[in-house]
Length: 376
Ligand code: SF4
Image (spheres, rainbow, N blue to C red):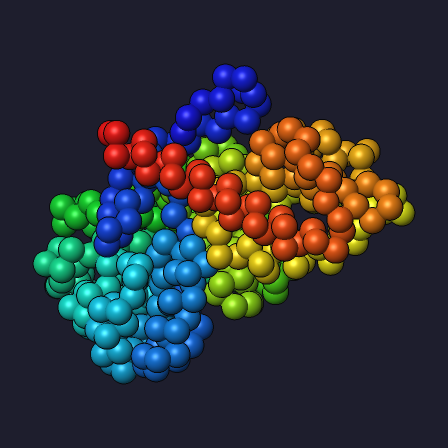
């Protein structure tokens, strides 16, 4: 993470974790925090599942997880993994044979808890399959499905029980000399999750997968995740994340990126800074922002755009954005480029013109980046 010496209050120092690979995506160390989502189709339906994988990848997902509860699902995985542009994590519960099949089918990572798959022989078989096929493993502790002996010991699900469960699973992998793993300790309760993750961060150097499980519908789940994951990320904890929403996986990806963008941890696409609007607005801010979000969804280049209703905040925000528009009087406003006042623009021509300006700026940023890469 680069340090910002001019604005030190923006600095987040990430916890130092080991780096592992999930397919071709590095997770942990100084790798960008990877955004994940999970399909919710019938995993045996290749067309539907692959459709969701492709849509999630297009929205920016670095990794996609697919449930593999039966043979139909692990069979379908073969084709899905072959066609997917991003690594696939196979989500397995208990069935060690599904794990082996998923590894053989090309999954880049198995989400499986080695303590829950039976005797040592089975554990060894799964680890061997993972090793033979270059799979990493994600240990996924969930506050709602803790082992009975831990519930007996602690009385109820709690951060200590979750971390102890996680460390038990880690030990099994380490005892088998398997170190390509990451770990999550999710709960639906924000307090429990956050406390468990903080304890976990101190107890291991494994990369950490963040999530608030069963977070809820789009609005409530987004808020819960932003609070829970936001504070952990702000503390420097977390190497990959999934926002769990009862919503389309694409929405999960978008929310994940917005959380990372808010903290300056990752940048993708146009970061639109807009005011809530009020009676002073010189144009319809809400409708304009809606239209621009849709028209600019294809831009992946990190950049900023301010759309502000009037001169109260417009010029100030435009100072810090690549492209800006501030509403004025008499049906027109002012365009700012690279923080400087540039030219007047009528409200009617605004959306088309701003899209052109943003596209031009994105092309300019990409050209500079390409030249820098070539020079290296
Ligand atoms: S910037 Fe202007 S239009 Fe927007 S909310 Fe503030 S006062 Fe209202």
